[in-house]
Length: 373
Image 1 (tube, helix red, strand yellow):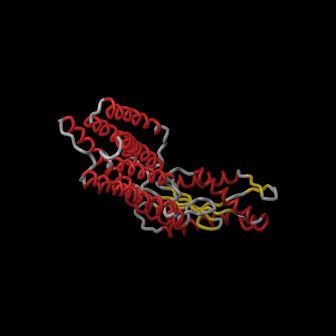
Image 2: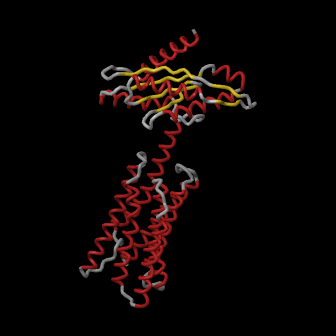
């Protein structure tokens, strides 16, 4: 009776938590109408129905409680792996292969249920195949590259690892001649409830990170905005001071932008800004940061870059923009040019991000004056 009660409680917990995740997805409270959330809901429901069938052993036919119940429990792990793959942005070309051990295990369970009935060997098959199917999920969670969701991902991975250890312990007990019901314990109820909550935690962390990224992103160009660069610059200034490396900043201004706007319209002006932003992206290293601070003004932060490197990047940006040939919405071709100011902060000089902007702006205006002279 205790076994049936524990299994029923586990089934109800999974069903309720799966329902909560479904509501979260349908109401848009998750970071997106995410496929990972949908697959995790399916995971919870499969586990719930599988446990409920297991709880009816001795009351319902063998084909329902043993064959179908174990099939749902094994497919639950495949759905979990798919949900985790979506959540961790992992390629899924290998996932169909997980159905192979499921098919083999089901064949053995049918054989051990009808042809040569043997409860111990049935438990042994499930105890070996289940952790095997959990392995990919644990591996993907530990290797996730998303820093924002890593605390929840690693916690979920540890919980799954605890389940794996429990199944391995069951295998050891069976080999010693001691049959024990795996998963039918009160601690397992708590662990089972924690797994969906960890997944929901991942979704909440992802949603918060996406909102933070959205708040720091310029909607027109996709570059960081001023708020974003202020946060990054503070970190880079501290690292530059700590490592005693130079830090360079460029200010980029589109020449005669007001004339472009007034002559060809704001739509063409926006297209010009987007084109210049594209040049900045393509001309920088992966560790450098390009930012639109407002209007036709951009800032480029060059990490660990000397004054000579900053000048080279400035010349490259000016040349690449100068090669652009754009067309207005009326089909009129026009050229674009930019002015670039530079400033390099050497170590052991206390400066703020605003100081860097100010000095770089002064250099930009000086260069513009020399051009117009």
